[in-house]
Image (cartoon, rainbow, N blue to C red; front, side):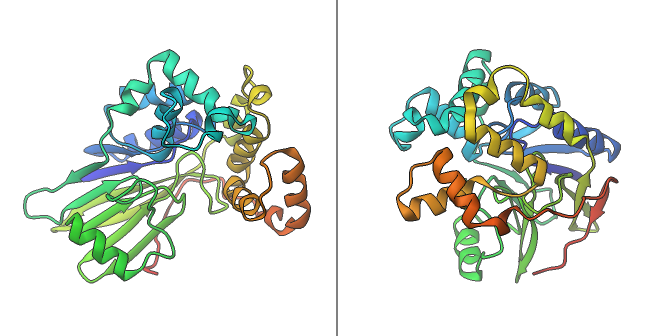
Length: 297
């Protein structure tokens, strides 16, 4: 049995198409899209339609739920997300999804997908953890957290995404895997990244795939229509995250919150001037598609 698990597409249609082509070549039995189909890049509607046409199973991601919350003016998210000009790119994406009807597909997505073939280790897939779609499996994941999660949601293999970094760790009988991101990797490798799980001889073997695609096509989508003009600084940050395969928004947002700074052009310029190390050029990523074996860490 072979399962493809891909996540964090974030409206990047060219990256998704490249991954689905790669998945087809590997003759998988099942495709699971593990949340965050939309937001960031502007082709969220096309991404949802393409995933639906592929017959993939879905889980709900935090950005998918944010789109619902914006359309419904949900009071559980900060008021700034509804009114602050800085967050207009998010609202633009939400309106596109609502107008097209694609938002209904995201609303219907469950929090988890379980795969449990007879006589094989069970796999539980969630965007973050089964406890919350923002609780990602990352480098600071502790044995205590894994124990709590696996007691609440028993499984032999826990698969998450959300952090945009591929990862593999083992604690006793529990294996924890992060798929990495299709549309916006944060490990300075701009190839579209996803996970293949292969079941053989009663065990799951993880294969981390990194798929080369034309990143310039994803960036060109930002210039079509009024997304960049309406989305302002946030849309530009999303653009640069795809280009550079690193996170810009969250570190800046945390910096501004610590200092009580309003998000916008003025504070962004101050932040960028104070932290030039965050914008150091990266080495060119490989042009070929590859499988990557991650050592346990």
